[in-house]
Amino acid sequence: MTVATKPSLHNEREVQQLSHGQLATDGDGVKLTRIIGTPELNMLDPFLLLDAFESDQPEDYIGGFPSHPHRGFETVTYLFAGQMRHKDSAGNEGVIKPGGVQWMTAGKGIVHSEMPEQVDGLLMGFQLWVNLPSSAKMSEPGYQEFPAEEVALEEWASGTRVRVISGHTNKGTEGPVKNEFVNPTYLDVQLKAGDQFEQALADTDNAFLYQVAGDISVGHEGKSVGERTLAVLGAGDQVSIKAKKDSRFLLIAGQPLNEPVARGGPFVMNTKAEILQAFQDFQSNRF
Ligand code: MN
Image 1: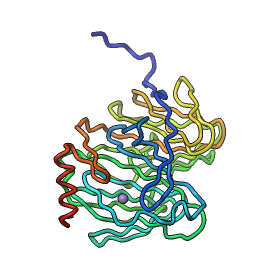
Image 2: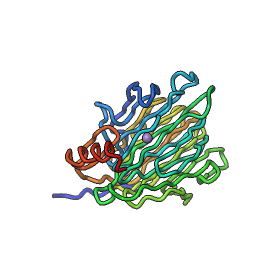
Image 3: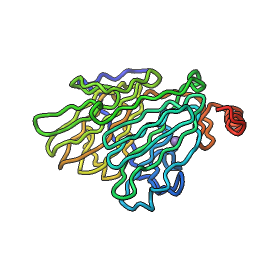
Image 4: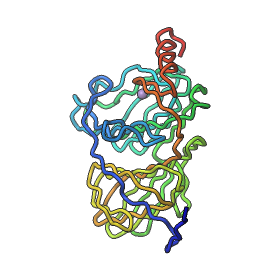
């Protein structure tokens, strides 16, 4: 075996795969785009699912996500526009507003509802599912919820704005969400035309970006991504993103768990038997 020496200080991550996702309906008729969790991109360990919802047509979202269970992973809801009220079986309740994030650890099980609180106007946001290691799948449920003003903000003189939900930027801005299982990085970057954003990422992390708007190019290869497109990033310890015009993207990374994944609707465990157990526990009100 030979070990290549790198000419530069960093091993740049490049775009490995692009995915546009597919239209889907979930909850009570909510129209969304599923970006991770599709035949094209089934998962990107530890990320099990990414949904984007964006509509100013109430009939696309007003039904919301009425009472449903989860077990074995975490749901992360981040809103750009609109309001969602969540309520759960443990008595927790709150409203997620634009710029706010809810990082919910379902653990051994919760039953909750996620309902748009508005009757009109634009609803736009994302839900990401982050897997838990087998050792934490049956832990007590937990919440980390932060309104917009508590999400760390890094502002550059140029006008570039980086909102940090978890992890930290190269300039040291640190997000409020803590997660010791996969040490996630979750950034919302509004990059001004001509600016370059560099982010160190552990070379063991899996990473992707989702371009919301604008025109960006990634890595030494300078590959373009495209609006409403996800780019899986290849191996490396840093990613560099240039904006050709004012752009916005999410940059998300985390340590893969490298464990077997068994899915059953709202439950994600390690084995089929654990999924069957989850359905039994839910049906007999043991959540
Ligand atoms: Mn849910």
